[in-house]
Image 1 (tube, rainbow, N blue to C red):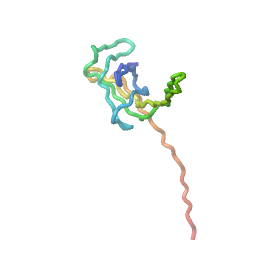
Image 2: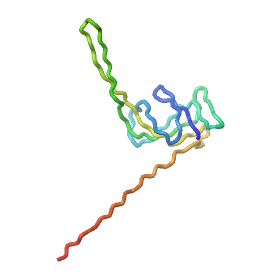
Image 3: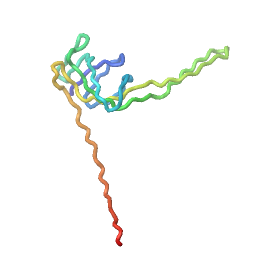
Image 4: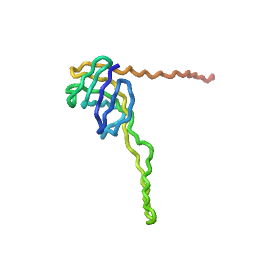
Length: 133
């Protein structure tokens, strides 16, 4: 199983094809769009690995944006004792949920590809009653 180490939002992630992960929110992105990550630090599989210095030119990871959202509220409460001073604040961090589709090597060759997700179609029976006159 091949993997890649990408850098986005100031963080590094080890990703595999077909994997779903939450990353820092991507600006100006809409759901169901394709995203390319060009900052690839390393890629490889069980036998071989290629490490960049610091990045690998030509390598990329293709992903699909599933949704944008916000995490749970984190409460920040500060109190100074004996001063009747207190402050309560909340924060909700925004994120983007992505699904990794393909990992490309520096040659442009596909290292791994996610399986196509097939959604089953629900069939319903419709009966038509005709009026007899």
